Length: 118
Image 1 (cartoon, helix red, strand yellow):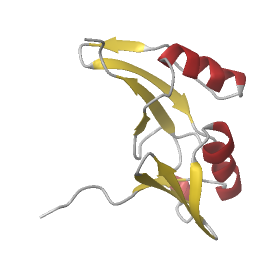
Image 2 (tube, helix red, strand yellow; image 1 turned 30 degrees about the horizontal axis):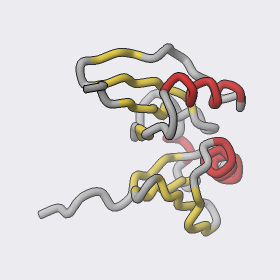
Image 3 (cartoon, helix red, strand yellow; image 1 turned 60 degrees about the vertical axis):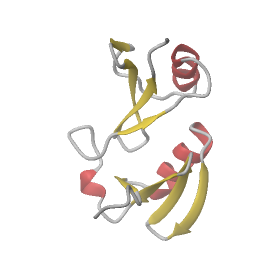
């Protein structure tokens, strides 16, 4: 019935600020821009930055996007902190891997995920 995920929509309050965050801070490529909508390539998954529904942008709900860091979780978190990104908690350890939550420019919770070491 379903083939998979087409797009993950991220509600944003300020489309220009959000585009800058995902492009400049996170280093992802913008693939489409159309007014209050932009698409970001996140390693083959399309993130839609949706400025048409700014009321949904906050840490109280909405989608949770989890990224794979290029380097270690610690190094990536330090880079984000150096760029002024809010990191509300330390890395959490789980049997299924390690997770760190940070905030995007619109107040959405976003995560980094590192699988367990074998």
